Image (cartoon, rainbow, N blue to C red):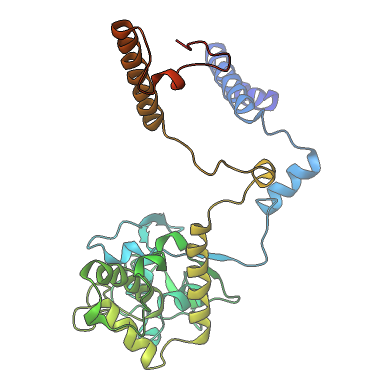
Length: 308
């Protein structure tokens, strides 16, 4: 800060301007210290973070899979960027696949995210878009040196318990209830987006207007690779495992719950019936002076005294 102030003095600033700059600079440094005081690190760690950006590293790079965005008429995943000349352009992961080069026509979304990326153009390795891309040709498709791992959110898929025991590929569609059919249709729609090539998700992924029928045909024609089937099985196992609930803690494992828990309503009814019986017996005693008719035995304690 002292060096900055000396430089301003040499520049010919008046004393008032120098004082104003000093106050503003002190405020900026104070705000920076307040915002970062909870993140104290040693000098070696600070040097490492500056050079590497993060202390956390993975063996693989990941790619985000946004399934639902492909079914919207207006895509909402645009990012604004600019080149070194200040020219503004858009980036979009959805548009990257929809406008992918003709050479990648038969590449599904999962493989596209795993093997290709939109980067600055390189003459030998870049591929041109099939049609006008929002990036205005600032970006081109290029193969990745190392494959990424597309991150599939298993919560985007449905629990197979909702299929009512029907197999997606072998069941008789005509005998399934409309509700179950719609659930299986939604599940097939998400599977098709990942592993069936398309340009328009609302039209290219259907067979006779049905996602489920198209998904079954892909399986029957052998177009699903063993790798893709294994991925889907892993996703489905993760989704279905949520039905197992949480594991029991130590106290729950060592204790037993009562075989039957009475609800508060049941307890209130029993107490009310008992009160009515007692009142009836007391009325009978006041009128007749005795508890004949069964009341005598019901309302005497072990010593023969009346309980009420």
